[in-house]
Image 1 (cartoon, one colour):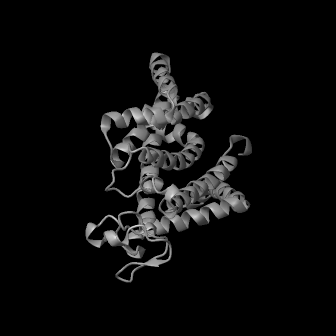
Image 2: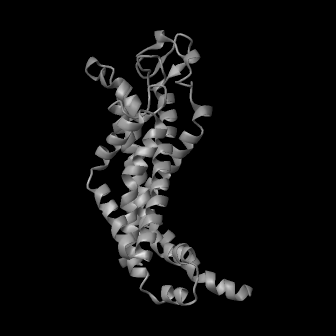
Image 3: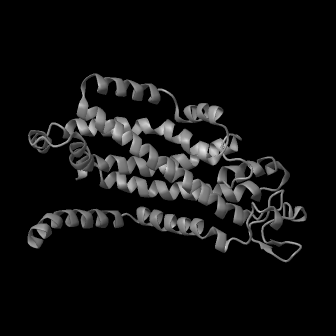
Length: 300
């Protein structure tokens, strides 16, 4: 029995090692994963390594407002990246903002992937009127720009990080549904699906045990790119005043806080959060681009 299992697992392990070597062959992809790991570590350990909690009013002093990078507070606390108009440390704000931005990106991408993938699989497997109805709903969804759909949802739901996540899920699930449905249509005509049907296996088992594993490659690529896109959209919505509230840490909110001071010389309030946002999106996109190349069906 163990010999059979080893023989079944060996091709999978070989494919995994091959994909890993392909990933490591790209210096940009390796750079992206290193950057992403550093960013994740900074976000996870933000409460430990941050000089202050920028959203704890007891730690703020209005006399420390708009201090330039490299300054010290009146209490002797160093502010490497300066402070904003409320006396909040920019570095601490970035670290806490990364936590929120990454959380929004990952949660919205994962939830949209689950909903969209399930919808696409179900539509492809059932066919007929149900498939037509679901695909018309997907087409209607995709006819609206993502940012417009998110704005419409936030106009109904209101501000707040959790509402931003919900809005992004609603705005993005259709992309997964269309992609998975197209892949599943090809897979359902193959012999292994016909064999599963002839054995009278339950529909849910055919969907999630047989069809789903063969549709995961495009889902992984889309989800990776979606995380970066969601982070950018959250920053845009927060900058417009429709995303995170002023009491919630967010890179977009940090950029918005300093926008009115750009022309008065206090560039650092928006500049450093903007750099952090840019580096985060670039790191995720570098990884996503390489995954897209590796998981391309033409390269499999």
